[in-house]
Length: 222
Picture (cartoon, rainbow, N blue to C red):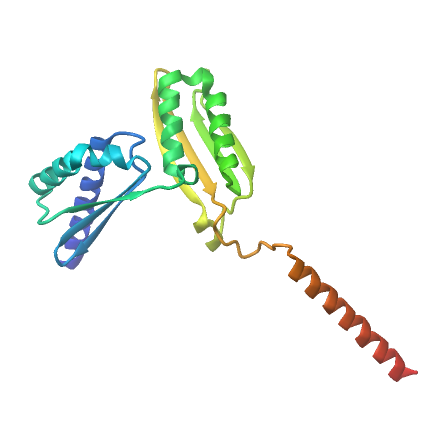
């Protein structure tokens, strides 16, 4: 019984998320998170365009709240907006922007679109970026194009710090899949070493201690 309730809960959550995505449109939000509190459901929408999501005097929020109550039988939904300060480090925002640019300008300019997006992310300070486009770009045969820069973790626990997202662009020639992975500059990488004056000084002291220890051993032998 508990398993059925859990499955139904996840189905309802998926329906709510898909409805909000459709209502807001592509490129208007990055992620949606639903939390359950004693006073109702808290729906957290992460976006780089909070003004659009909120609407004039909160009209769009009010409309979404009303529909969520009626259509999905939510008791007391509360929509909270989280603004993305640096959309260049949010993979979903960048993937959606690429998708919208491809739909607007067509597949003939896919390299320009991909390189400009890559350059924008790199200039913002990202440690690593990977953009993958798969489909007929252009041509009769589908293939995968890869645009990358810097350092990315692809396996292990460290791979979790990489922001990853997917999007789709619907073109005349067919659907183009878009995958974006970004390693932001503010993350901690366990195997990364920063050379600082303090570290250099410590290495020198260790070297001197080792040399002194060797000299003492030689004196004891003699």
